[in-house]
Length: 93
Image (cartoon, rainbow, N blue to C red; front, side, top):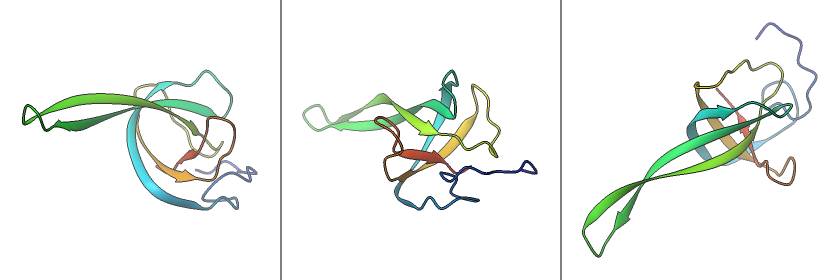
C-alpha cells in the first residue's frame, strides 16, 4: 500500500464511492489492465426438491494500482457506479 495511487477510481485514494453488495470471490484472471475476473460461489435453494445446489458466477472488477493481487487470491469487492461496459465492482480488500 506504500505505492502512490493516482487512480480516480480507487475507493481509498480516489473519489469513487461504493454502495450496495459486498461480494467475495477467487481471482480467476488478471489479463486485462486494471481489471480482474473473480469467481463467486453461492448456494441456491430448489424448493421443489427441498434441497440446495451450488452455483457460481463471474464478475469483472476494477483493481486500483495500490492493490496487489494475484490469481487464486480471495478478494472482497463492493458495488459502485459503472466504470466500463462490464465493470461495476471495485476491489476493497
